[in-house]
Image (tube, rainbow, N blue to C red; front, side, top):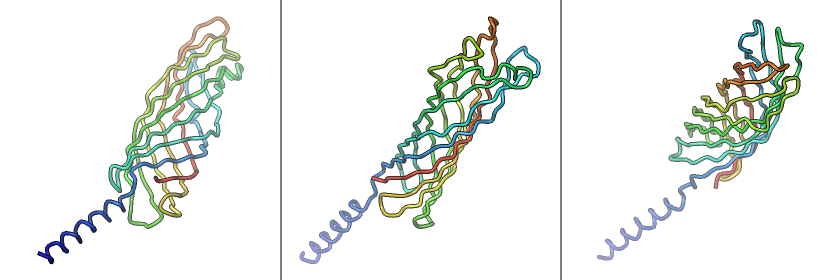
Length: 207
């Protein structure tokens, strides 16, 4: 009986140690983000028309939940703006206007765990971009429509201890919203092919 009790105590203690050692599934990151747009688009009915968009630097915050050591979901939050410039046959219009973007993005990631403190990952997901606080300049009115996009992601964390680490991340968002505007009293429509490339670097905290 004593041997059975000692074995039971050992198993209970061992299980307790495994439970205590299990990592918290929640993780957050704060990054500085460089947003580089594709600079492509058109105004319907105007041959040779083109569009370009300003690149920006913005803060980004994300929350990750780890379903296992390898599989995680990440919700990415941030906001930035873009100035819309006319190009090609409408280059003379200069800056058409400005819009702010709120692009919440959800990705599913695979994390590689065989490299010690260096933890690379890949991901893919969906984005929904909300355009707000829009204003025209050479255009009397600018209205870029909210739109869904798909996302590809690659990056890595380098952990300096069990909680803190550095992060480098790159994302490509395939985003092509429709828009309408009023230019010189004429209503026009078109498509803005933003397709931004996002480079980020920052800190990671694992709870």
